[in-house]
Structure formats: structure tokens, C-alpha cells
Image (cartoon, rainbow, N blue to C red; front, side, top):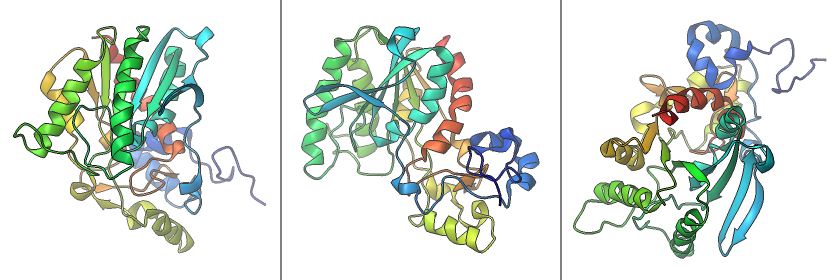
Length: 301
């Protein structure tokens, strides 16, 4: 009987550490053969029901809740925040790794379908009202927490759009909405790191991966998608580029989801997305060392 290790792979099959998850993209040629026929973790048949990276609720204010991860407050060198919709929250696994490396206490403020933007999201009720109520609470909270100097933001692209305003196009409204939101944060926030949204995948990705494994086929190849279709333009990332500011920096980890033409559902034996667009906590965590390398030079500017 095979013995399962912490990764969920048998000890006989477990790939080298540098070939597990996102790091495999740095060693594509050497990892391809060693990982091609191994099991996938987490199990695609239950991936959508698994929880995200741990985060303990530490504060509630009306419809806004704040949860904590990273180092305990009394052991931390600083406190940082992660803000936005569920596509911000699924970066917690990666930011946990970064927070441990820096000694940060990290706080997460999340509202589904509601990135931190002044643009009005085109949402159905009750999400429309919940988002409208949440954002003022977030800004007020930041003004009351001057100890937070670094904020990480991310958001879903290609989902519900924004309502055009001021004679602008939807895209321009979205871009200026992010710029306005960052300007509304208190001056005590001296670094805003914008993480480009991840690529999407096919709606039936977990079924496709499970079928590929059952038929002894490589899911990364069988279930991959076209990059030009999977990767949506990101108005927050574009806004950060336009500002050309030392305060607002941006990180693009697309190469850890896609090659030049295709995007992959399994990388380094790890299931990348648990549904069409949300990362698994496992894959997010493997992105931690990558995010750490990207963040270090940005925070020194």
C-alpha cells in the first residue's frame, strides 16, 4: 500500500520540491517528465468544497468583517492588509508565505463581487446594496488604522462590469474607479500592491481533470485553455501602470498560470483552480515564494 505524504502524493511518486505547484513553472523542462503522470492535489472531485487559506475573524463592523492571518500581532514587525473581492481573498495562501517571511500580521477585508473601487459595480440585488454599504466602511476603517502602511489589492476581471459614468466608457470608468479608491486611502498607506487577476479556465475544469486522471492522460494538456480567451484585461493592473507611482506598484504572475499560448489547470501536480476562476488554497500557497520575490524590490522603492 502506498503511503501518502503531506502533499497527498505517495512517497514513491512525490516529485522534487521544486517541481511541486507554481515552482514547476521555473523548472518546466526538468519537471515535465517527473510530474507528468502523478496524482493531482487537491482531489478535483472535492476541490470546490474545500476551504480557503485560514483566516481568523478579529473584528466585525456592520456588514464588514476583518480576519487575521500571518504572524500574531504581538510577534509582528508590521501590519498589512489584503482588500477586495473573492479574487483578493484567494491570494491569502500566497500572502501567508510572504507575511511569515517579513514577520507581518496580515488583515483581510473581503466582500464577494466588490473590489475596492469607486466605480459602481453592475450587480443584482442584494449584492449591489451590500457592496455599496461595504466600501465606505472599509475606507473609514483604514483611516482609523494608521499602523497599516502596505495594502494588497486584487479583483475579478471579466465578471460583472461597472456602470459607465461621466461620459466615459466602461473600461475607462473601471480604471479611474480604482485610481480614485487608492487616492481615498489615508496617506499613512504608503504602498499599494496591485496583483493582476489570474487566468480563468473552462467551466467543467474539475470534471475534465478527474476524467483525464481516470484515463491516464495528462490533465495539464488535455484540459488546458487558450491564453487569449482565458486572460481578461485587468483595469486595476492598467490603472497602476498609468499612475507610474512609487506608492502604487503592481505584480503580474500570469506566467505561473499560462504559457505563451495556453493556460493550465494543473501545474506541478497541483490543481490550480477549484472552479472556473478561483484558486485552490494549495496552489495559492505554492505561489507564496514567487510573490515574495516580486514584492521585495517593490517595497524597497
